Image (cartoon, rainbow, N blue to C red; front, top):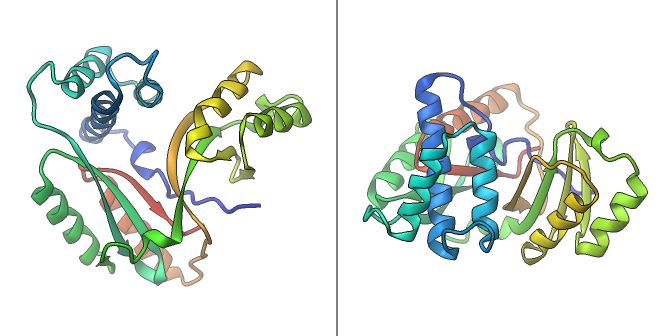
Length: 241
């Protein structure tokens, strides 16, 4: 059974104050914009846009914000282009990170991320230094595994749809697949009447590590929080359990 990193999507799990909500909406808006730019503005024909909109709705993002983000992606509002950049780094305790940034300003993005990492006991890494430790996977997440009434039927359905692993850890049920099979797996799960809480393409660590040292663990969690507060940071993937 594969491992699971509870830090792999920190940027989509916080947000209580107004300022954090604004940052959250900014992150979600960029995700929608990139999806619309790459595949068009109709979620019926753009699976990644559909996924991004579902995430935005889950985060209570207003409809007007969603529509503006789509128009930005399709070029209807004339705003600057959003680009995706993957940064690599090492954190406290030998942890490894891939940081996905969605930004309209490369210089600002790298400067803020570099500062956050170096000030919190981490180091930036060169291209390829960390990426080899991860692989792309389609991941469907179900927060409440009890929604699956018949586990045998569920597992058979997702395997037939192209899934290659089923993980239950930290109270989550996750179905992993090759990226190009994600939509088919999601459709198969929804056909069973099971509500899903997320479906996206992630970078999953090939092997996971545990931070046993209390100080190193505290430093790592602080680094995750600081990165999460940066609007240009969409997602942080790590190899920490």
